[in-house]
Amino acid sequence: MEILKKITGFLLEGFLTAALLLAPMSASAALDSPTRAVEHDVKAAFIYNFTKFITWPPASFENNSTPFRACIVEDMPLIEALESLTQKSTKGRQFQVIRFGSGVEAGMCHLLFIGESTERSLAKKIIASVGNSPVLTVGDYPAFATQGGIVRFIPFDGRLTFEINLEASRRSGLEISSKLLNLAKIVRGQP
Image 1 (tube, rainbow, N blue to C red):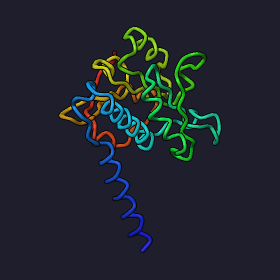
Image 2 (image 1 turned 135 degrees about the horizontal axis):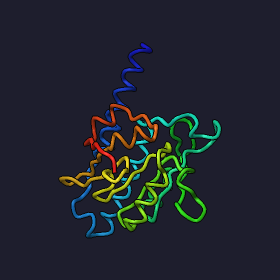
Image 3 (image 1 turned 30 degrees about the horizontal axis):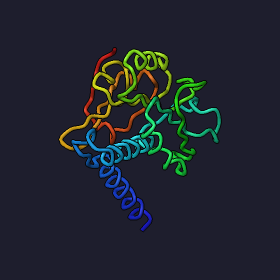
Image 4 (image 1 turned 135 degrees about the vertical axis):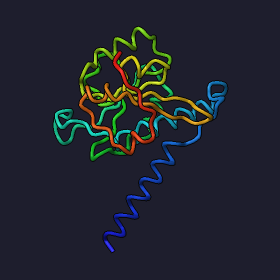
């Protein structure tokens, strides 16, 4: 009976995660603000679920009560969407959302989102400042993954999908679950 509960729980979690990760997003998201808000909610759900399928090295956290810090560069709507998740935890750690900048260094973050509106030269500097640190970099502009970012959101056929740069994730010391990799387009190469 206990085994059946575990199997059922595993299958349910997998189904719900897949459904959430493949949630629809309107192709006209850039045109109207209600749909744009939905896009930010979908990205926030992706980001939160990424944390469940990626393992950070233990040294990434100062101690057992250190929160999981998701830092966001210049994307207030995404910050607002993620703030609705701050009552949740990920892998036993409180999920914390921080606006990147003004004293926040890239190395303080466990996840760092660099939005499409960020100037490209600044985005490159931020990615370079992360270096090989165990920071999951996530972005949504076309060259993000090929410039050394780890996960890039891609709008495709009315849905939001993503690609993963395997070399960048390995350099950072992050372990990405095969379940997440199976849902992604894999990008290889260094910036």
